[in-house]
Length: 190
Image (cartoon, rainbow, N blue to C red; front, side):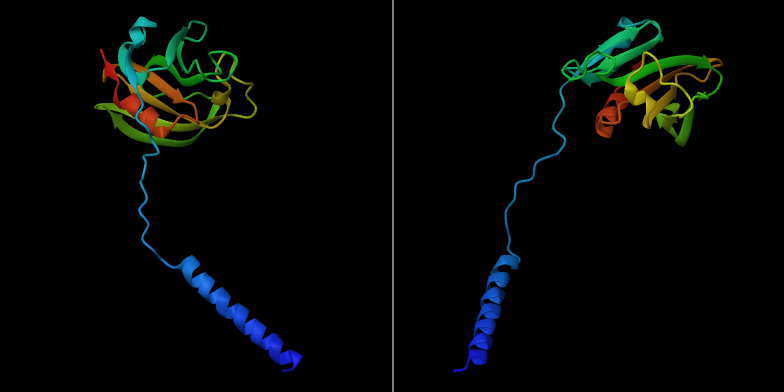
């Protein structure tokens, strides 16, 4: 046999072996796979925010490891995770809660609103905002750094009277939307 015939036979042999290998490698087969939920069950506790500061007259479920503190210089409540690696409670912040009294929903002139969705929360009017601090505005002093970047905040109108109390719930972008929604859905206004 000449060299050309041997090379052709070797190539044919390799193609056949590769084909058989590929057949078994890429063959569809039934494989039993156990599926686990990506969202593990979060243990919660009932937090009475009026015990943190009387202006925040509501209760809500928060993850059991979270804590809440009042920030008098900003009239805000910081809900933080003490086990986070940041250096202080404000940087460990997961939720940042403020309130205001007004006749209508208000927005700050220091932020750009990239989205505003009117919704209802427990029968109350609310607006879910996606906001970003304007570039020309200095960083928000005394607030978590994540508040200086794109994040979401939900404003809830407590009553239909004028003026009404509005609570604003901003949440850390890395906090899961499900965890935030579970918190919001658990709110009980007093």
